[in-house]
Image 1 (cartoon, rainbow, N blue to C red):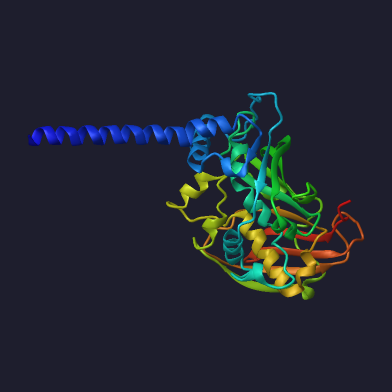
Image 2 (cartoon, rainbow, N blue to C red):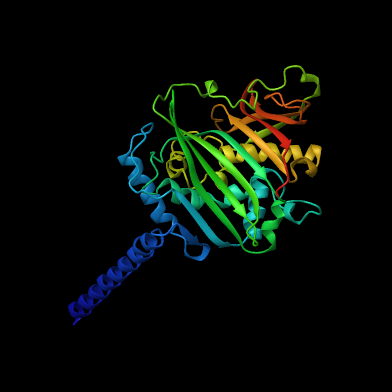
Length: 350
């Protein structure tokens, strides 16, 4: 009698596990694979993070950093995410970790932070990096440059459903390996462009090559040379994990995993967001209100925990010789800059 009951229990357990396995395969593999057959996705039917992370690891194991592979498919690498909605808890969490303050989104006359749309593109970015026709290994990609443009107030994204898009713009062979430009963009409920950012990522085949030789002509890595006395400096503490993990883009699961075994590097998105938050606190929200353009160069990783200094200064001329005034800024440690950027007014969206 007892053996019969135990046998029935064992059969039920085996059957339950089998059904659960089938369910997991359906949710994380089959459904995600079906969804990704199209380049137009819907916010309520995105592939699961588990499926995308598994794809990331598989591609990272089968591709060598610094090598430009032939495209597996002929279609352009672009993904569009429809029917997105801004979630206040996510925005508050972002603002808290970036130094704006937990109540920032509820403050009067405040716009959504300039770098927040990039945070919303994290999973879509992972979809792009693991696509069959993305020609580089997703592992080891280093952000070297970035240009962010706010064409309309980012608050437009709070007024209804909006659209996000990520696409590969171009690949370039450089001395250090291969660079790829990836454009992220956000459009309002009416289809009008609100925000865009172009990330330049480096897949390096020479691990010990310094990134300092790869400079953006519009940004001076040396910082203010003849305006030192005009620099406003703010000292900050970079935490080891608290806050940084929220900025550990899902586009880099290997980097997130490595945090368990080594000192973490501050994510570039966090570094830029903190600089913009401090600038807004001291110079006013008008400095980063649309239409505005931000050019940034990332020189080398910032290992956390650390004490850093965020400095910013008025500029009368851009490094490219234009007469447009702007605001230069950097994040440095012991006199060495990890990030250098410049904010300038841009032409309004037509």
